[in-house]
Length: 628
Image (cartoon, rainbow, N blue to C red; front, side, top):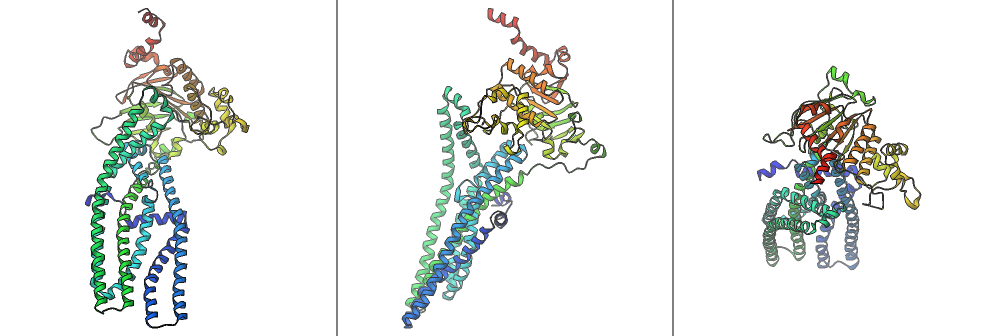
């Protein structure tokens, strides 16, 4: 129990306040519906238990027919009005409950886009995100909806409990205590089951994350060819069945706890109501209460048991919802948008602070004794180990090395996706940690190996902005420079007669433009050109291309970035001939640095890699191999 309390950052009360605050901002009318439901849900049952007593008293006191009709008609009219208004409030708030759930789903999604990259790339971050989304994935049984419904139910039942406690205590205070005590047993029985479920939340989230990946990958058309050629459909099905089996086994363990709690609750309910009704019948038979009082107390005890049970059940639901709410808020709280270092700049740094409106000549890049590891484990090998590199403004630099040498990590650190464990990265003399996130990202036009082409129009795909914020002339100029305008011009929006650049990309949503691998790289170059940032980063963009296409692509990159600072990252060496400087990475640090000719003369690791790669493209070597 102690562990559970330590893990919970927010109490039930704090989470209810959190929900009400957001409801007031998004749907204030929902607060009105909630207030209406509480008041009417208290009034209706009180009228319901008093009506039989009043009817019996009228009959036993020989009241005339008009009086009976007037009194009972008034009570009935009030009850009907209360039930109608309660139904209206209930239906109104149900729709808004669902909308609040969609609101939080959007908040989680937007946070996943704006938070630190490490918070969404790491296994821990992905588990947190999956756990947070699980809070909202069960419809009416999601954490936010359950917490609101249970809180309203508790408030309503508590008010009724106070009223009915006064009625029952007039019959017997000891009966009231017995009913309350037995109900508390049910509360603690169910809470034990909920505690076990909460302890298994990480295991559940990890299984769900794997299962979602299998389902997504299996349904992604991009993997369709491989799955058919290599007959992996059965393998994926087996993986899915295995994960479903693990999920089912875990759910059975959880349900066993709830089954036991349900058995305890059923026995307590039988004992509680049995004792109450037996005492009530004894009191009526012994003449301690009148016939009309009997009907009042009978209704009160029946309703009281229901209200106590409602409070117990709602408390259990509230406790479970609180665990889910903590998972959601834990992700929101621990993944806030990165803020710049609050440490003030020195006078020298302030004088060197880059002005984003000036040409690229301003932006030199310095890695100063940078160490970095993707895990906080002190025993883990560092990806970058006292890494040092200086890139002058306008310089073309190639970072080369074998896979895993740390080349892509350099890009992630430079772009601010991660921060160094130690050391500094400076742009224009200023520590990148002191930049606002948007200001830092504005400095880079980057082409990655992984290709992302959303199914929007060609113009929106190039600008990565909505159509109303996209400049068509600028899109066309970027496509022409990238050598893709002729291909795009072959398509149009169809019978709608729209502009060429309004033709949709990919076939994921609708019929659209389909590009080859080399053409996709040109599209990414057009996107980088449209942004027109002062620093270009090309992170292994040609890994999937043949050597001829690779050489042509790098030639084009070089021509388009003549006035820019450019960083080429590759484990293939076609890019090095265009660069002013080559830096060879090995074991997280630069072991060789210089021009292509200088590094060949050193006869080191770079020379060895270049020789191994180039021998397969040498005519003489191919001829010898063919003769063999």
